Amino acid sequence: MIIKDNLNKIKSKLPQHVTLVAVSKTKPVTDLMEAYNAGQRIFGENKIQEMVEKYETMPDDIEWHMIGHVQRNKVKYMAPFVRLIHGVDNLKLLKEINKQAKNNNRIIDCLFQIKIAEEDSKFGMSKKDASEIIQSIIFSELKNIRITGVMGMATFTDNVSKVKEEFEFLKSTFDSIKDVQKENFDLQIISMGMSGDYELAIACGSTMIRVGSSIFGDRNYK
Ligand SMILES: *Cc1c(COP(=O)(O)O)cnc(C)c1O
Image 1 (cartoon, protein in one colour):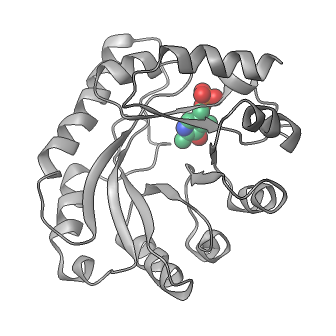
Image 2 (tube, helix red, strand yellow; image 1 turned 120 degrees about the vertical axis):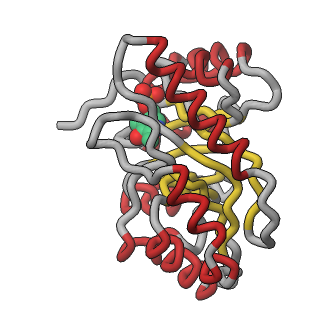
């Protein structure tokens, strides 16, 4: 019952315009089902293989979000069902997603992952990369993807003002590109905020938070 209580506690504090993605990576299906039975329908995973396995055993009305770094050669495995891919950070990947979406006769929603932290370990593109992709002719030809927002991961630090700056940077990036008119571009989502910083993220304009350990408990990577 702990998962249900955690979930309800978080949901009770969320503004209406903020969507909660329950980050269930490394957790067993029994844990996910506890969240499901408490009403949660959006789950985030960071490994394609693991997401496919859970998708195959869990109810059909779940929205599966890929929140991790995506390897191009694995896109095909999630293309039939993935609802939103958060970590798109290059055109080659976007082209592959478009190809696999087309093979499945669907349009896949994606977020541009923007690098907002200084740490080298964090993936993402610059604001300039993002606008160059959007303005390119190739982009306009990708009819089976739709860019619906931006995603970012702040530096892992206790320094609140630094994290705040990074969230504000993502919000300003969103604002600077959101008025671009393209058929496959409809910016609505700012995906930022995790267990440790989602309240700050919401204050900085987040519309989608990705929360794992505060719902499911600490992860064990053994
Ligand atoms: C694991 C993960 C999260 C959730 O992290 P918690 O601190 O457990 O809430 C959010 N976003 C991404 C991209 C992740 O990989």
